[in-house]
Length: 150
Image 1 (tube, rainbow, N blue to C red):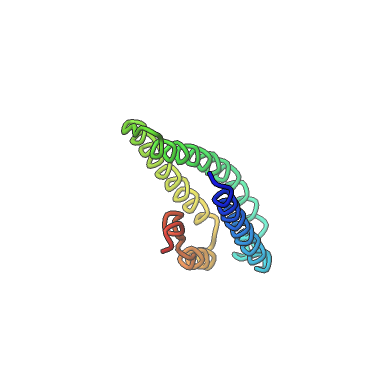
Image 2: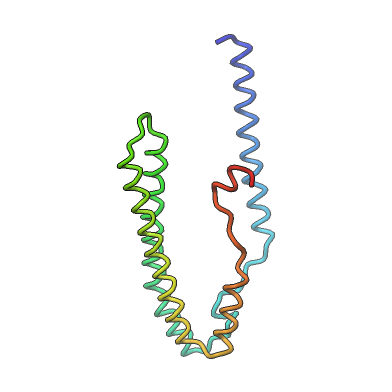
C-alpha cells in the first residue's frame, strides 16, 4: 500500500474511533443527567408486609431471568458467528435460532409468572398503578433497527 493510502486509512480509522468515543460519552452524559427513578416498591407504596413478600418473590425471579438472559446472549453470539462464518452451516444457524426462541419463551413465562405473583401481593389500587406503569413503558427499538438507521 502507498504511504498516502496508509495515512488516509489511519486518518479514517482515528476519525471513526473518535466518533464512537464521542457517541458513547454523550450517551453516558445524557443518562447521568436523567434523575434515577425511585424503586418500584416506593412507587407502588408497598407496606412492610408487602415489601417482604415482594422481595422474597423477586430474588429467585431475577436470578432465573438473569441466567436466561446470559444464555440468550451466548446463543445470540453463536448465531451471529454462524451467520458470518466463512461457510454457512444451516444446521448451526437453526440450532442457535431454536435455542434463542426457546429461551425467549422461557423469559416470557418467567415474567408472566412473576407478574401473577406480584398481583397477589398488591391491593386493587396498586395493581391498577402497576398495570399503568407497564402499559406506559416505551417500546424498545431493536439493535437491527438502530444499526439500519430506522
